[in-house]
Image (cartoon, rainbow, N blue to C red; front, side):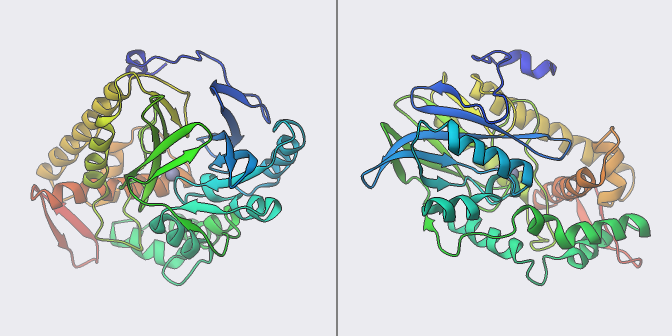
Length: 351
Ligand SMILES: [Zn+2]
């Protein structure tokens, strides 16, 4: 266990749902675990007992990627684990493939709507369609500007960028129901307020039930790993670290004893401790980044060994470069470093 996890409480201890098994975490709330083919090998989904527009059934929060394995598990779950009741609506916290991938298939099969924020729905449609500016060549230009020169790596990144999102999210429902900041959505007996977060994705929706003190945190607050905050090619001037830190403040209003249901890692208590840990984590990395920029001008690629001591696979490298740029940008937008585009076309930051 990570030392910081010792400060958190895991009420279900080591319990993890087996594939296609639903575990009740609170009355009317079932926990489902779906596989992912990455170093981060799972996502957690939530099924909430609902009666929506007169129909008894389940509201599903997040869907899993569109892989044959996940498809097979869904068929098994629908046949055996839902007490003979249908899905009645889908809410996606955000558009990342592990959350949105299966939404189109599930929504078509059950004839049900997809609820998302505008920012997430629109970006999901753009990426699933691989519109110009979101393909592999756009991402490698972005990586090049930030110091990646290795031709093999660039080629791998280009190929990955061309198909990564659309393979995992081959389609998105063609219409959706928009959800808004602070909207309260009634699901069964629960009243869930939408808490918008930025930095990880454009307009991430977490759901908080104030009465029962339960937070479905999506990817905004995770117990073990820190949420990815990356600068992407489509928004090269973004400042996701500061956006994320600012968004974390919105969770301070949740009750101290809140049960947090995260998309990755086990349900936990200790939300405010975790918020503090996440702030400290990013401030420590910002300090490492600033110290490196004091020694010499740093590109994002130069910064990788400072921020990441482990070896990274291709999937992780994309995240890592995005995070390195994000930490440099956070300092830049706080006026703690300057940036220059050098003669070699690479952007470097110096203190
Ligand atoms: Zn995500």
